Image 1: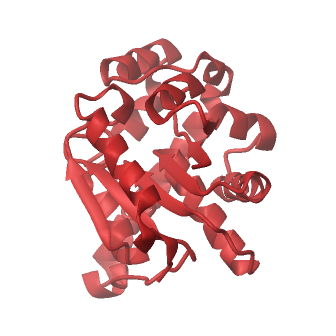
Image 2: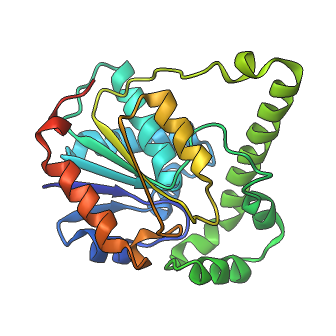
Length: 241
């Protein structure tokens, strides 16, 4: 099984390869920033779309910002009518309906030095990618965009009814089968974010278990990996909705 792991903020390649196996190609946030040199997540998504076309993975696993990049990439490829023969597993990410009042770390990153942020990642079970340090101000800019989008969403809900503000399920089709493996004790991303993705993309399978934010260091890492491998091997996963 040819895997592509799209990593989010904080992590280098090594823990993901150790977790998923030596045949896994890992695309790190550092590599995306080096290639795009921007905080624009749509540009990130375009870069990831080209990497998916080049690598042709059978399985895509995405975590944190990697989930945003993967979804944007697949939506772009769908719009360009480029067929992707893969399946997608999302781990602890958000697409919309991210609430910075429930998940306040985007504010903290605006004032925290790199050393403190690195310590937070380590305390949460993550491995720190030192190559991200020169990009820390760019990452802060990304989180400012997250803050603005989240607060704008709250204002929208105040001005309009909840039904009009949320618009219900968006019924988005990225053209490939998807599953979500959500952590119930993630300190950075609430379960509501994953349920919102499930509703918007009509994902049939959302599994919940405790694995913090970084599955590779969790006591339940084997369970997470088994869910990924079962999905990769499932005949049902070969067919998109």
